[in-house]
Length: 513
Ligand SMILES: [Zn+2]
Image (cartoon, rainbow, N blue to C red; front, side):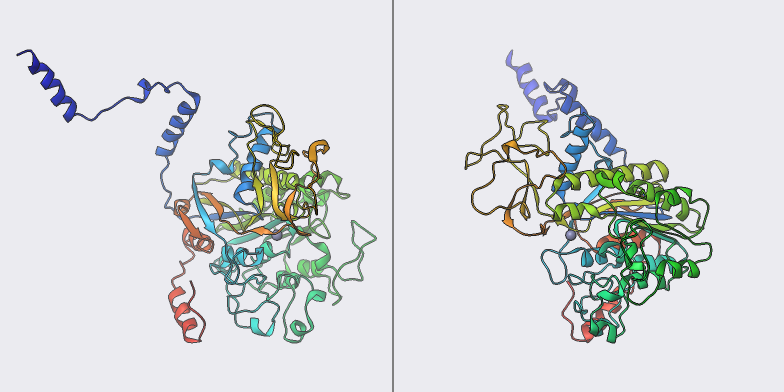
């Protein structure tokens, strides 16, 4: 008789789920456990926003691959005197994310021209080509006629929205150009860059395309570098009197822009930028060439606004429209620092991009503004070794034993390195033990010699908040980003696409994958 209760307990145990409550777990008070549990609660409260987006802000970190994001997060935290590894950047806090396939129509590893075109037009195209479909041929003007695709910015202008582009690179550089230009070579930034064939076949340079852009009332805000592309070779630069413009056609495109735009303002230095107030189209070209890296900005003769300041100024003007706006903000020089093999400058420019995103989130309402943060493509930066927690991200690898980790050749090495680039050396590897590896001018070591480090071909990340941002999940093709934007804005989803595909199939082009 005494065994019956025991059998009863066994039966009950078999029927009931084996629940151990979280608060009873041995790890219940562990700070990692507590933080992640709180994070779960926050995530459970997130609801998809299926309202119409009034505005869209597309942030593009040029060359901002996943290693750059991670290294910049650590750098940002360490610069603030905090624990770098567990730092949350503003980008990190955006609720939705996806992996993005960046290959071009004809290339495993892309450049910014086809990738930016994917973001702004919804199609992939060939390396070097902007705003033309994959039937175009690089550097072939004649073959580009009739291959133009329409950009998000062109659609937005037609629909009565305001449009703006902001970049720290030349505003005629590939990524910003993908908002407004249609060109068989990303290098055709001014008339002297056109080939004889391109001139003969009637192609127009990128700077002229910006000024002559025929959609709506034109771009409402244009802020970046590249002044020389707009100035005739007969004009001296206002900031650097020893330099002249690049145009051989004698045209003063900034003057033409002012003539074309009622109430337009043109500024080229910080004081003029700061004085801009009220409504009206704004063109700002703050440097002959690219703008400075963020860390070098204080050195500029006439003063340059930061990416954050340009972004907020753009919103000041764009939000005065009746029907919302589309703004692209490019941190264009992350890519350039990587090409130089200078990870420090790339990380500092990534931190500045994060600051711009934070400023925007404090300024706009994510309820009606779709905010997207992505990269056009990656770079070949690597975070490697087993550095101990808190080790300076720009430093030599110091292991858990507190000593510099020695490589197979008996020398220490930096945590950040590149697969290729200017940091490669012939013969024996240089010993970096005495180097200031944390200096911003330091060129991180590379395996394969290359004058300029190349892009990387792995997926990048898109992160987002606002209407329809939940569509960014899993793994996506880069050109989907355009389609999500157009859907969120209600600009008429690409319903014409099947008809276009059918028409293309009829003219002998290969199936589009
Ligand atoms: Zn690049």
